[in-house]
Amino acid sequence: MREYDAIFIGAGQAGPFLAARMAAMGRKVVLIERKFLGGTCVNAGCMPTKALVASAKTAEVARRAAEYGVKLSGPPTVDMAAVAARARKVTLDARSGLASWFDSLETMDVVYGHSKFIATKTVAVDGKRYTAPQIFINVGARPQIPDVPGLVDVPYLTSTSIIALEELPRHLVILGGSYIGLEFAQMYRRFGAEVTVIERGQHLASREDTDISEAIADILSKDGINLFRDHKLISVAKDGAGIVVRTDKGDVYGSHVLVAVGRQPNTDDLGLEFAGVETDRRGFIPVDERLQTNVEGIWALGDCNGRGAFTHTSYNDFEIVAASLLDGGDRKLSDRILGYGLYIDPPLGRVGMTEQQARDAGHRIKVSTRPMSRVGRAVEKGETQGLMKLVADAETDRVLGAAFLGVGGDEAVYGVLEAMNLDSTTEKLRWAMPIHPTVGELVPTLIGDLKEA
Ligand SMILES: Cc1cc2nc3c(=O)[nH]c(=O)nc-3n(C[C@H](O)[C@H](O)[C@H](O)COP(=O)(O)OP(=O)(O)OC[C@H]3O[C@@H](n4cnc5c(N)ncnc54)[C@H](O)[C@@H]3O)c2cc1C
Image (cartoon, rainbow, N blue to C red; front, side, top):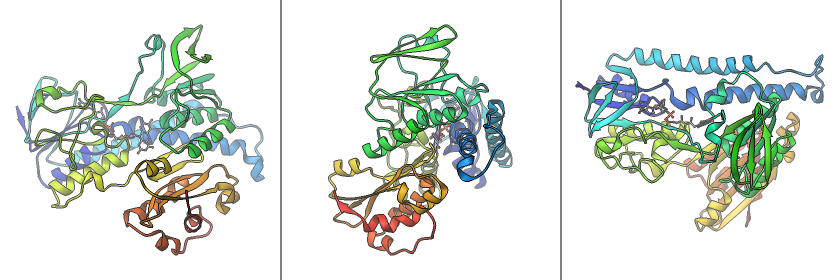
């Protein structure tokens, strides 16, 4: 039995940072990872996908070069092996950066292997046992595979396996029209594939307001992506060298199928029952305001607790636990204001509530929208698709949320996020002098245009 001060299961975006903090304080910690340091974000999520999005954007800019007065000698071509290699390098550099950092921490051991609880404060990895008074679960999530007849009999792709693809699919059929599916849809379309998205709901990215969701659909349709909404999957089968996806409204024939219908937590093979740690019916581990599970001394951080599905929410989990356990602070889950991006092009930057969420929560609201075609910076860049939207509380004079779907929207929305975190009134925000020309300079204008809705 190896004894430690703390055990960390999974090297995602929360545990390793806490482990490193504790190791820097001289505590003896062990980080157990069954695959790669950095978890999903570094190896199969944010980093490689955003590298691929950058390649896809470059292809699009090259295709549109003549619009900007730049002449190419012929249409651009995409070298998929080079595209994949570039994304791989981004991942490998980040992963090896983490490895050298952890190597430099004297009281931190890194163990590779699948770990399972065998008792409340004990886990086993490859027959070796580790015990500690504090255990931090940071095991993340994996692509969910829906129970569609025939799917498991075809060579389907997931968001993990498609990253390594070095060939261009002739026709990529994507099951699921939410964030991950849409990013892959646009990038593969821009690499040159025919792309069809099959979504069972009425709207893409259905968490968003309908006007934002429709604007996203408009952007993707203009890129030439086939969008089939309100289509129920019936079955998937091989069809010669390709596949056929059968839906209630007709069949779609493709060369490759990508499954992107959601993610499920990696908690089913963790032996949680031996530790007495509870999960909900979807497998997420319920936690309190400071991320502790129902068992004292065991915490669940990141995607596996169901309280966030992003790198920054996972990292924020680390910050909350570090504040309460190491720094004598008092941060908690309910303090955080959620923001996130959808990295299609142009991107969507989102913070706080949608208009619908604000209504459902009973706020009396004011709303303001502005098409990107009326944003100077977007016009100058020749990228005028999308819209900016702001939702405020008519009674408290505070911003409740924003959705900036447009060029630079992922960065510009930051101003609103900061204002919300600082609890600024809209009046104060309105009079802050912006920088010209930026997308963010329209925030005071949006505030001035707020109307009760
Ligand atoms: C395609 C894609 C794109 C994404 N893009 C973005 C984005 O742009 N922005 C953003 O904020 N988020 C994005 N995400 C989500 C983001 O990657 C995750 O939210 C983030 O990685 C946080 O994960 P985590 O810390 O919970 O754990 P993870 O990063 O998932 O890491 C968990 C680790 O635990 C290990 N593990 C699991 N079980 C065990 C076990 N029993 N024993 C030992 N080790 C184990 C796994 O191998 C893994 O390395 C994306 C995700 C995907 C799939």
